[in-house]
Amino acid sequence: MKSLKKAKIAIIGGTGFETLFKGAEQLYVGTPYGIPPPISVKKIDGKNVAFLPRHGLEHSTPPHRINYRANVYALHELGVERIIGVNAVGAINHKFKPADLVMPHDFVDFTKLRCTTFYDEAPVTHVDVSQPYCPEIRKILVETVKKLGLRVWDKAVLVCTEGPRFETPAEIEMFRRLGCDIVGMTGVPEVVLARELEMCYASLCYVSNMAAGIQERLTALEVSKICQQIMPKIEQILIETIRVLPTPREGKCPCANALRDARFK
Ligand code: HPA
Image 1 (cartoon, rainbow, N blue to C red):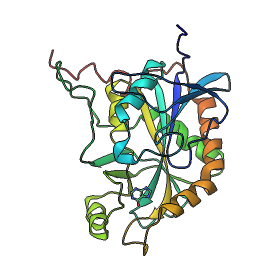
Image 2: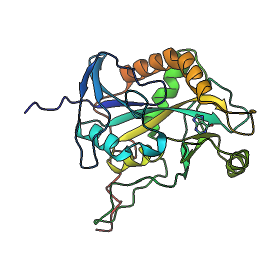
Image 3: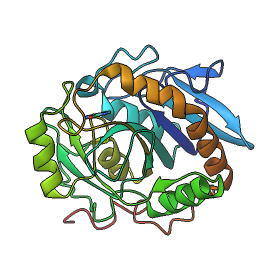
Image 4: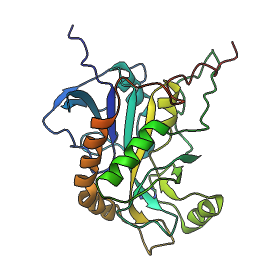
């Protein structure tokens, strides 16, 4: 049997990023949770990097039907330690504008129907998400974006909704009053599942629209238009970040030992 190709770093791409590693070798990885979309592996600066399109190669899986557990588990099987997720979001904070880059530091979970844990049975496991996004990857991402002369909002609370519909204006107003800055449909449980397997995770978000009630109406088309516009910048940021990211990781973040104090015995 052919052994699986290994990678320490992975990118999980969202809307518009399905073909990021076009032409690279594709891996079909089975997991106890099902089969994720094909994972491509490519060398960047001498490092094997895995790429997983979370909606599938043809963008055929809606946010609420994504098999988040299969996706994250498969990357873990490949030896991945650090994940950068790329997510389209709507802006709730009026200071943020379409095409802006945002790096959330915290999230609020308003999903409803998703499997949000690998630990459904004993041992009972409660992972700490006091710092849900890896501070080390966040720092390097922010520095990289600035080095490239681009602007990034380096603190933001992301609210994750179930979708696939967009939110109502009343929901967005409620999220604004709760202190949320951006809204998306795919950030959770991806970030939590990565932490449960002691993988580092950070999310690079791009604003595709102002959230419902702030602009007149929302369309899926504008999400893909902004994505096309911003994709070359994001690719550049990812490549530069991967160059700088230490591998193996140094383990100074809360992610690497997330299970150490998560169990009663
Ligand atoms: N709401 C939820 N998810 C999104 C949005 C939005 O306004 N824009 C892009 N993804």
